[in-house]
Length: 132
Image 1 (spheres, rainbow, N blue to C red):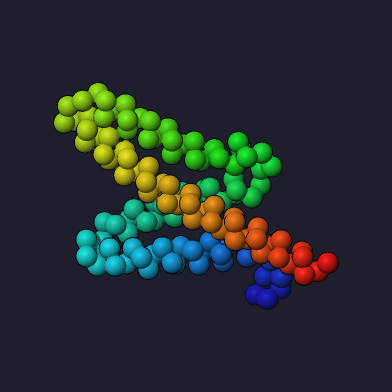
Image 2: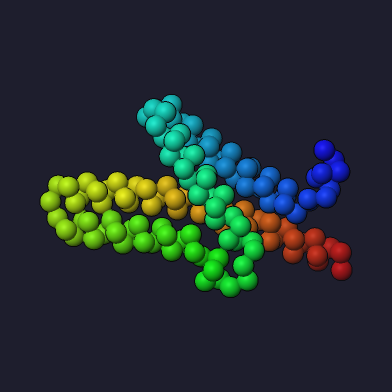
């Protein structure tokens, strides 16, 4: 296991940082789950999976516009929710609320992925400074 970790150190550091941040968010949500019910945990899993989708977009591309492709999806869902809300009626408002909640869940996953990117980036800068 040690050889595997040393061979893939950068990827393992990214995943371990992401898992640590997910664990912190999960502890906060655990209180909510205990008070509201188990449905919240499914929302957390959807957000975590979206965060895993966002994570490669944070690290691989060089252009910021490409890094933000999953964030564009969140804005598209919010715009669609706003259009449903403006459509009016009870059905439009309910659909807008459901879409807005879905966008919020995806946004939490994206935020955790970007926090992971920031932490790993800062760590890398710090180790580069100490090596010089």
